[in-house]
Length: 101
Image (tube, rainbow, N blue to C red):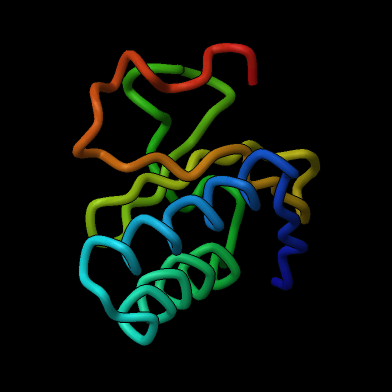
């Protein structure tokens, strides 16, 4: 089954922030790109909308994928379409998860 995956504006901003933060922290643009590539590839590799667990903090209808130490929050829009809502660094306090998603 082909799943359509789209990324919210907030999740794209999250990816840009993560890229800049990793690049600054490691002084490696290549490592930062690899992190973003891993996150992106995991996001688009989903096979069915309920493939991952319901997020333990946000609850239904939000699900989560974990890549490295980042959590991708998504929700099913239809049976064949998901939207990535947020990309969250799990090293942060989980209370910083956006509740207004």
